[in-house]
Amino acid sequence: MELDHVILADVISPRPDGKLDLHGVGWDTIFAPAVPATHPRMDVAIRFLLSPHELEAAHQVVVTLISADGVELTRMDAGIQPMPAEARAAIPPGRRFGIGMILNMASVTFPEYGDYSLVITWDGNEPRTPLSLYVAPLQFPGPFAFAELIRRIRNAQAFGARAPAHERARHRSCRRDGSHRSSGRNLCGPQGKPLLHQGSRRTSD
Image (tube, rainbow, N blue to C red; front, side, top):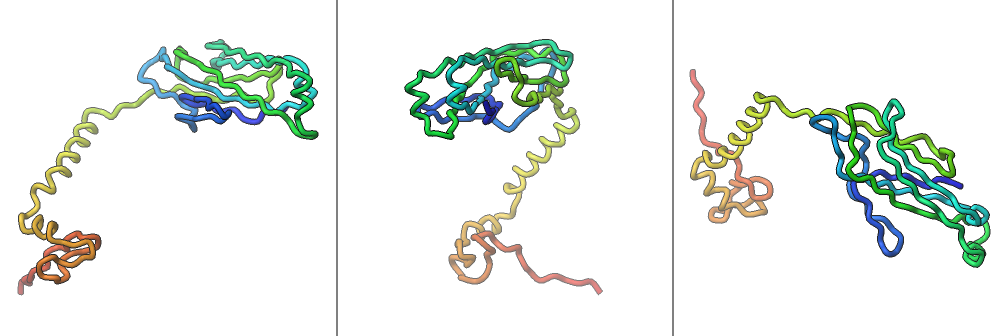
């Protein structure tokens, strides 16, 4: 037996052609504002490669989520039934047969922040090291940081409204090629953006 892959995701959906649609992959940390924290759903996709001889017998797959001190949070079992002889005979010589499964973990409660592990066993043996999973506190910005963010957003929104009327009119008169609609002079920048007003400047003696 060879473990082909293990994928942890928010949601994994099978297709009729055997492919998988993965949603929310590439993570190993759950951020929670407080503990105990209940996570609504996690899916695990596992695929094994078996020889025709290994397909003659039944096998048992178990996935267990445990805490750092070995407490079991949830357990998922999946059985693989023997393949009929005629189906095994159709497998090309030297090729292994892939068997995939999707296991769902719903409403898992994590009692505290810290390290957790997904342990996978095949007939009681671990074909790979456990997957690491972490639960960390969710940090919200402080009141002063939040107020500063709101101030910057409002300033950005008000900037356009405070622009001089002739500059707004110039922007509306710019073509995409950079020329001005009425004069044709080079009053506009790249992609129709108006150039800064270049009037005469005085220098003090």
